[in-house]
Image (tube, rainbow, N blue to C red):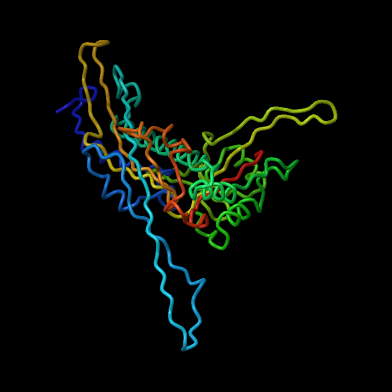
Length: 362
């Protein structure tokens, strides 16, 4: 059996231990319902035999808006639903950490397994979060020029699902009491209650805190100690605060009386039920340990590997020919790789896509 700093290392047991470590951010993401899975995609891609990309059916909806009047003398006209296709891609990630005396260096005498597993659990959440933000950047960067169905649908989606108040002056350029409600209504109209999760920069969160619009969640650890989390609620939606959110510096313009000072534009994302598919399907060898007794007088290396199915509900990942092994965050954030689901002639309604963004000065 492999040794971890000269201790026995069982990769299966370690993996189970990591999964049991409480991770409040991951738990809230799961509870929000905004980040989930697609069973058809999972069935196609969960095998560990090099599966990279899959197209699965996306079924159109029937509508009662054109229900026919039954006057007893008119034949019933029949319609049919449209079945579209949606693309999902696999992103594999790997990392390793080497320490000359790994457990002693990081635990200061505390049980090494508990400490290492806790750090790996947090690390995995950071990886997932960076992938989520990459996908959001990609779908809002879709190509909106052109006359084909995909470009027209992308243009409508980006316009309707973006609530930009950054051009306003004073407090009108900052998020306020009605900002979230207006943004989700603009995006999905009477279907706005499907939105469950908001991801924002701490600058935006601070403005909401000052207005007493954020309510922070707490977490009680195994020792009964309660602490505040970087998680809150805003108008009943879970809020995840992350300074990795897009923040664009806008340079000052003009001079004298017409001068406009520089400012920063912050992007806040709002996600609905099942909006993002980020499904951990595991690697064939997720954890591995190597003991090198010679180098630096002896050192241990821990290897970690993961595989995730990536997709967005209502939007298809269109795999470029250059992508042959695993989708990088650059692949996920490239707008040209995403399209509103369409059949070449028509696309699904933009209101069916539970994503929105708010752009503000804070």
